[in-house]
Length: 404
Image (cartoon, rainbow, N blue to C red):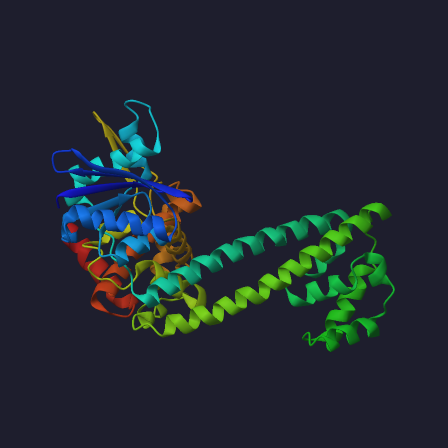
């Protein structure tokens, strides 16, 4: 590589600095974040490389977006750089401008490119699956926030419903609250009317639910002032409508994620994991991807997924640090799966309990367990094998004998 390009990207425009192997600036330009601007950037890099794109490397602080897609489609080598690395290089002077950051990125690429991982585009299926699962995660987070708002709202004027319905996102609760937004509205009905309402909305066991609702609503309970009731019932109705929309969208995402997931040849590998289910198995495949050349060892995956601690040593002192720099979605799904595995795999449950008995907090024990799962899944993934608990236990036993 002979030309090292640093790109300080932004939503509206990008600052670019190109240096050669001696650190001399060969080009410095400012382009808009649009078709014309990115075309100008690619044309300039091709001109400097004289048509040989293997000479050009591009460093920037992101691994996705239209800018990255344009560079990859243009045949350029792209190297994502951790923003903290740029911060560390900048600290000596404290100065910060887009132009300075672009040059710092170019210098990092020039000095470290042999140790940096070149960005390899994922397959179309993995790209779609990853985007679908991550987007659904955001919808679920919004859904969870709305449910909490509804819970807080009901506590202020309609607390009896929280005793009757444990799941505030369930269709029975949402339909009931939409039809009877206040306690006074609900008290105007009898058991037969409630049963007819539930039956008409195709809610299971309408008679049993109607009797329970009637009894609970007629128990003595705290009531808000009329003004508070009117205001909060309006808020509850608005929240319900949003939750219902999200319920449908999340189910639609589930169907599409399942379709894309099953279309991939690696889907059965991740589906073989106990309790991975319809949500975790696609997310695991999406984050691992299908490029077996991407990782040379399980340690690289552990670092990327944030399951392994960062070592810190100074003199005679050394201790592990929580790994902040990682792919957050990858860490989330690995730790979530690790926790689920404690309910299906006895060895995982025993390991988790042992960590807790050592004084580890819940999240620390789960993260340590996730670190083991990365090694297991890495072997499955590399060898195209399904999960077999007996295979893992035999390997674990053999390893323990070697240590002894």
